Amino acid sequence: MYNELKGKTAIVTGASSGLGKAIALRFGEEKMNVIVNYLNKKEEAQQVAGDIEKAGGKAIAVQGDVSVEEDIDRLIQSAHEHFGSLHVMMNNAGIQNEVPSHEMTLEEWNKVISVNLTGTFLGSTKAIAYMLEHRIQGSVINMSSVHEIVPWPHFVHYAASKGGMNMLSQTLALEYAGQGIRVNNIAPGAINTPINKEKFDNEEQRDEVLSMIPMKKIGEPEQVASVAAFLASDQASYVTGTTLFVDGGMKLYPSFAAGKG
Ligand code: NAD
Image 1 (cartoon, rainbow, N blue to C red):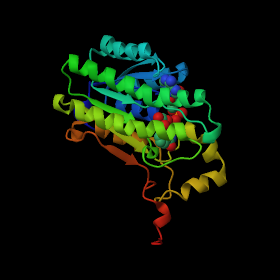
Image 2 (image 1 turned 180 degrees about the vertical axis):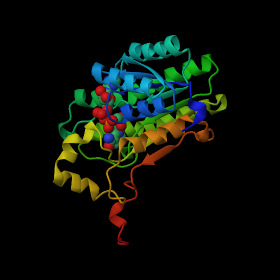
Image 3 (image 1 turned 120 degrees about the vertical axis):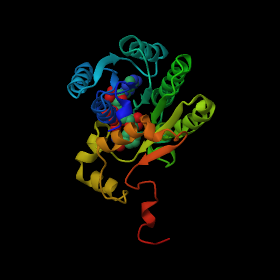
């Protein structure tokens, strides 16, 4: 636990499930005020908000599509109106779908880019504008992926969106370091969340994924949430413009593990 997080305010996008939910709950355990953003799972988001309150934090569920500018404005407005501040912006919402690149439509490309990359651009820059206006030395955390550096056939839109987030976060980190605003990415590998349910429910596919992880374990959402809490905290006060990989070693070229090559 990080004592200084108590009473601070965070927005977590896509917080009704998976990693966003785990991070929102962890922020609740830190006794933070949390805007629990959801796209369409209202009841789940309200449940998360209720669990945060039980843990000693404060929370409200707020609907919003991260790819829509007015919706991001509304999230920030909600943080200001309900909690009077915004210290941590956790841009977590993201989507993916599998399509061979030569069959991918412009619509499919635009959809993933607009949620993953444009949504992160809107969330980051508008949170930074708020922090500058209110002289807050805040933390912006963007949920990337190992695919910010690892190519991924059939997911070119997703890999391009996460690769773009790498440069987005580094550029913002450099631009606002002087004002004390930190911008970092978290890059998970394979984590046990709804986005992977179909894959992990299939034993063969699960084993295939495990073979790509040097630690031979699928990650749990709480193992990502603890990294988000660290990046939000003063313990990371000198950390900016970096990506923390939470992947059991997935990006370490596992095919070299036996000393071959
Ligand atoms: P998930 O599907 O449970 O979470 C994604 C959330 O984003 C959902 O709650 C969904 O409703 C929300 N969302 C989708 N479009 C939205 C929009 N336009 N506006 C607001 N919310 C929207 O899956 P997850 O694994 O928890 O994914 C969370 C993030 O983690 C994503 O950015 C994903 O790319 C990233 N990630 C996940 C893994 C993994 O293994 N689970 C690995 C690397 C990166």
